[in-house]
Structure formats: structure tokens, C-alpha cells
Length: 233
Image 1 (tube, rainbow, N blue to C red):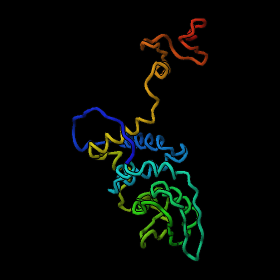
Image 2 (cartoon, rainbow, N blue to C red):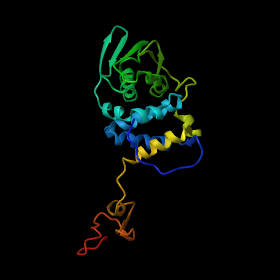
Image 3 (cartoon, rainbow, N blue to C red):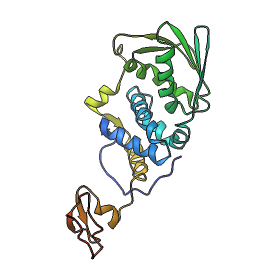
Image 4 (cartoon, rainbow, N blue to C red):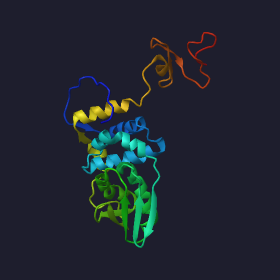
């Protein structure tokens, strides 16, 4: 299980209704904390949210597998074409991290004709079930055709009644309180620890060690503890 902090006791509703923005923010922080390169994170966050919207428990998978997702996020994938089948070897990538690669390759190589896409080497490959929910936003329909296999065709309409993040945008999503607070506190580990230095540069205000505002931050601001120069212009 991922590392956790010692969160304070909390009371409130269970489950908690969480907005789309909160889902994305916390998922981003958790992935960042676990070493996913920043360029990979937005696409993986979208997959996690899509999995949550589709009832595939994307947030629970993030909590359980965050180290594996972070460790494999930038792992390169390879592909081969065999007749009408596009074989994508994701080389041990976690499924949630592999989905953006699969979508990109399917859009580039398998969208002109009806073809089969086969994904090999994915960890937690059951989560590849999110692919049909992500593909329509990229002009594709991916239909399950066996373990790790999907038929692929272009589509003109966005989606055919599949759950999407639009539902979370409108209504939020209910998350068990224990799971949500575990993710929340895990994500907080990505933040800079609170200190006099971190508080100096919050927004445009400059603070001293006691938390008092001593000026407004400008491009030529000096260290407010340096008595030889003004703190701000």
C-alpha cells in the first residue's frame, strides 16, 4: 500500500461527493509524489477520472498502485503490425499509465480501417476496460474482443452512451471517505512543507518568520531578512 501520513480525525459525510477539479488535483499530486514525470501526468489523470466515471474505481486503483503507476509512467512501448492486428507491447506498464500510449498508437495506425488492437504486457490489465470510455474523445471506438483485444474503428460522434468525465463535471462523484482522505493526505506529501521560507512567496505577499506581511513581491524583491537591502521595490 502507498505510504500515508497521520491525518487528523475527520467527521462528515460518507461517501464524500468530490468535484472533477478535486479529483484531478489530488490525482496529479499523488502521481507527482510517486515520481511520474510531469509530462505524463495530465493524460494519466484523465484516464483515472474516466475509470472512476465508468465505475472501474480509478481512484481506488490510484491509491493501491500509485508507486507502480509512477515508476512505469515514462516506460517506452513498442508495436508491430501483423495483418489487420496492431500489437502494442507496453513492457510492464501499469494499465492506467499505458492507456494514453495505446490511444495515441491506435489513433495513428488503426483508425482508417476496422482493425484489432492487442495490448500485451500491461500490469493490472483488467483496467484496460477503461479504453472504450477514453477512445471516443479521440475519434475512435474501441470495442472489447477478448482479453487485451479491442476492435478499432473511427467514429464521428463523441460517444454512444458511455459514461464520461462529463458526469463528474456536472454532479461530482461519490468517494468513500476513508479512501478520499487517504488520497488527499498522500497527495499533500507532494507539497512544499510549511515553513517561514515557503510562506514568504505565497501569492504576491512577502512574509517574515512570524507570518507578518512585510511587502509585495516583485521581480527584484530581496530576502526580507537581509537588512542591507529593501524587501521589495
